[in-house]
Image 1 (cartoon, rainbow, N blue to C red):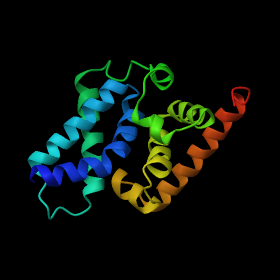
Image 2: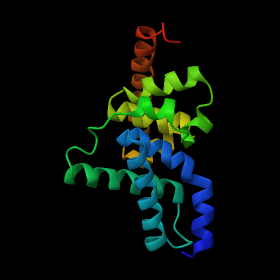
Image 3: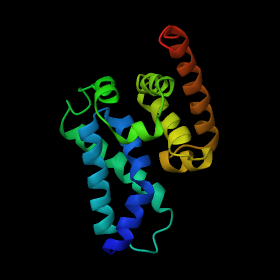
Length: 165
């Protein structure tokens, strides 16, 4: 893959990939590192005939995250997402543009990993249920059930914290 192709991929997918990486590790700087490493792997491994490049990128990002978690048990321990959303200008700010949406996003980050992942992929990365199933190795029915349960848990969190909204 040449630099121009990689640049096009980066422009097209870096925001979605950043949000996904942030949902995995919950740290702005670690998410940036995951995205950078994902595109570095793309530079080394992808050719222009690779099908489903978007899914490949998300899968590589998740695998890089899992590798880091295995190597460093404290990789997910830092949870300063609330401070990042309030104090630093991040790509999340361009997508999550008002205060209510930021609060909803913060509540999504409180969901367990699998629910958080399916919500982020569906609502923020525009994956269909079929694409989520393919990317996560689930059946389409299991992805649908997981999305339903994630929404249900998110609703409970929002009701508990409705004074904030």
